Image 1 (cartoon, rainbow, N blue to C red):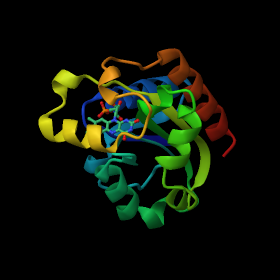
Image 2 (image 1 turned 90 degrees about the vertical axis):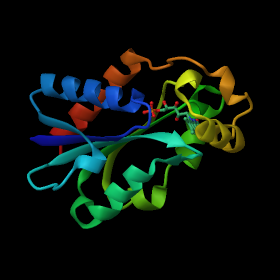
Image 3 (image 1 turned 180 degrees about the horizontal axis):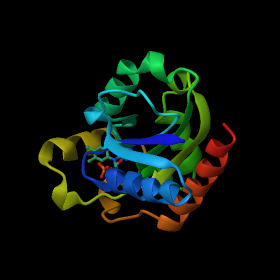
Image 4 (image 1 turned 30 degrees about the vertical axis):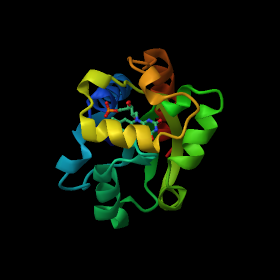
Length: 173
Ligand SMILES: Cc1cc2nc3c(=O)[nH]c(=O)nc-3n(C[C@H](O)[C@H](O)[C@H](O)COP(=O)(O)O)c2cc1C
């Protein structure tokens, strides 16, 4: 089975998660391609998709929206596992909140959605320019100031477990 792991990432942490998921799926004998969604030219030949985006200003990145729009017809009813990376997930109600508020469910409904999750990402304020700092400060909807989340929160065990779940579900497509 040919799987595309497509990501949208501004500062690289979501890209690294996508690479990691790709390696986990490859261990389970899937034929995996990992790509920035902006570079994907065609979906021909793929049987299933893992798609993931960083969250900026409570939404997935524009590159992900453009990808989903470009390939809307091709993705309809295809097996898709979707993940977002953010920091809001770290707050007490964060998992439910981020999946409810940050994900466009109207769009995901078009797919055969096999899995949906939110991972804690990485925020390194030194790498965030002034424009982004403004967006983050103005639009972050958690209780904590976003600047308090200045580190790498990715939990590779959680990501590995999710990859295994996705592999199991893709096998039963
Ligand atoms: C400009 C900007 C806006 C952000 N907005 C949000 C947000 O609204 N909610 C949230 O939980 N995280 C927000 N984040 C945190 C990112 O989602 C998190 O750092 C993610 O891991 C970044 O992934 P990347 O390294 O692939 O770009 C924001 C980060 C930046 C830089």
